[in-house]
Length: 187
Image 1 (cartoon, one colour):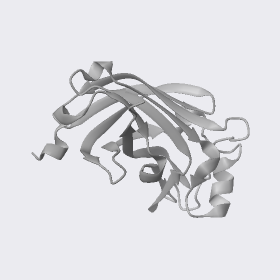
Image 2 (tube, helix red, strand yellow):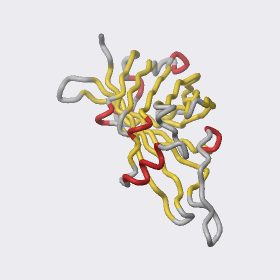
Image 3 (cartoon, rainbow, N blue to C red):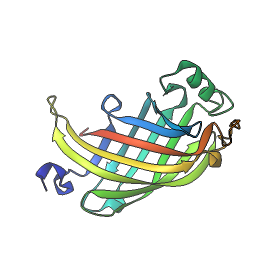
């Protein structure tokens, strides 16, 4: 295993998510035949990471619901409406970790509270540590990638349409995707 993929060389401390070099996205099945991918373009977050004792680690994330982007303006407008995210009433989606545990040298399980449309439910996300580096601006960076599947109806995101041939337009199951680059906050 290369030195860059060894968590033991990560400084314990607070890391801020770099939204320019990170992606928070989702995948949902559409019309029973394909997958639609989207992302949220505006978010912020930070957390404390201690590789020596992951139980001391924690994470907070805030996502602007209006920043949803599926590469289709009409669909994005519908997703922002009361049929889906009701972003005028609930402008933010948030996640706050409640526990972090090490599964292996590079894999972690992060459990926390996900709040969408004012409804908070626990979720568990499996993350893989993707590396550490010092960028050209001398920032120490760490990266993690993770996914989890949720049922959108548990957060009141219920809208759907029956298809003539059977099935529904939008799957209940949605995969959430996290590709995070975080910068050590040495202040």
